[in-house]
Image (tube, rainbow, N blue to C red; front, top):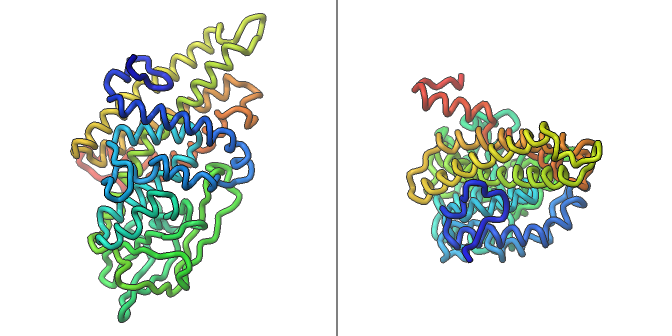
Length: 391
């Protein structure tokens, strides 16, 4: 019997996937159910991430999954990776964010822009989960406009000196290595690897989050932080380098948020079939069925859009404008489904016994990070008209 996707497959998407792609989705789904689901409520309440799983995640091949196998990675294609991210986010956006940052924002730029020595040193350690990385681009005053960054680097003898502050950095308080983007003395953006324990490198945690609570977020403060010359990524030249990393991460987000949407949809269906009002399940009411039908409609459209995105990526014909359109569509779709699912759950939906409100809260962050909905709208608008409207 042919393998089938776990979850909604109204238009037989399975028929367009390889057995390996489906098997990876099934495997990740099982791991999330067995290993992550029992932990998420506790960690979400406490505002922590289950770091006891990080090496296990490495062993499952969740980090840097599409990079060459010579660096101890899974070496899978982009669609299989996307399905993996979908299932991790079906657990929680924080879980998928952990894998996305490690793979797309730390491992991928080291592979793309680093020296062979840097690749051999860091990629196997990050792939296994033995080490954790973070990506330092966003600053307190420069999010949507990363080119305005004020973090600076200067060359002094056998070292570089870094000064500046980065903000909203996933995993910075626990990272063993940070990929820092800074402007050199000529105003060009360059990438640097800064290891934990380097003097002048501090990573205070941001507390009080109401979204992405099962994810550790912090600042990076660089105060005359001195690193050796060999810690520069030699091939990272200009702002296009960090922006290309964001395209990689946004690709994973486009798949991930479908996992959130699917989790909320399935919870709403199950609840509606068992919740009795006026002597019948609320699934029997027309307005409830309308909500469920609209959810399935939006998920199905997103599945095919995102599958084509993955096929384009594997053919190396993907462009950042296509990724922007998909993020616009998929994140909006997911957050609307999460809110609608919570309404079906009624009062029960505000407790963490159910997943929909947790996903809705997380998606408020996903709507903003890796490019706001508004900025992606303008990227697509420029593609349509040829006129940039960013200023």
